[in-house]
Image (cartoon, rainbow, N blue to C red; front, side):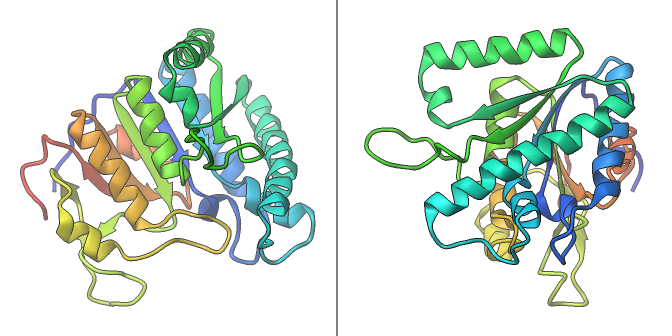
Length: 271
């Protein structure tokens, strides 16, 4: 396969918990560093970047020396609050090293449902981008619960990243995960699984292939990534799903190299 046509200036990058936390629960410091390096380099080139980062729960578990998340919602939210603070400390340290300013933006779903709050948060994003600041976005886990008439939770950060990309009129959503892209069957179960390089339409068949949720530290899985891709395709935007083990893969994606899976209406076929 030849070079892809990727023309993106405003980019949302979503990094999953599995990329930031090792399977043993320890923090993957190399990923934090390389992510900061890559986004800082692109920021210096004039790209507008928004980082949607999972990992608050995983970092909280590590900080409190716990092996698995508690069952109680309140305890989960408390862990997320601890982890979110630590997460931003890690990002601040690494982005500072590469002379790039960042800002924390915590969101709930109802912010996008109400026009006034939606306008204020969009204005905030635009001001940050204008000043070359990289917004680091996460769900506000300490207050996000679905009850009464408020729809506050996004469910997962794949959905959050797609919603942010949509509202911010981003050209491209890059989802970094622990898998190389979208396969015709689960590559962790089937040795003959084939990576699908380009997808122009997400149909029911793909959701059947997608299966269940992700790692014990996170909430996402392939299903949620396909929902994000479906939203991007419906709005004629592009999305790339790729392995986040080395965030410098973002350079390859923007150079049009055929890494991961590109979801785009311009794709001719499914390969």
